[in-house]
Length: 117
Image (cartoon, rainbow, N blue to C red; front, side, top):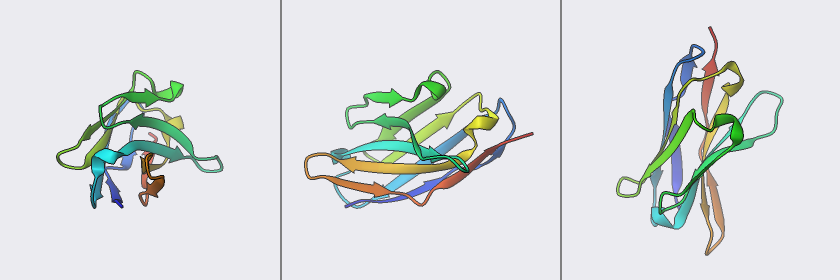
């Protein structure tokens, strides 16, 4: 089982960029589909992006063209590069690891991203 620790959140002005990182400890990082979710105040948690061990990615429509998810299997890390940030991107962002063959889902503690002037 992996443990996840996020970093990189903070306050940024509209139009700015942030890069979130998620470090995974434990074994078999490649066995997990990694994802980023976010939860804005008063809203449900939503899936932002996923990446499998082969690098195949998916994105929610609202971030396509602005966010990029990547992973380094050798370093057991996953990143979310966020560009052209908007106030509506303000949320707590959570790293997620989902194992498929032997089902298991793990969450990080979350990191706050605030987009405001």
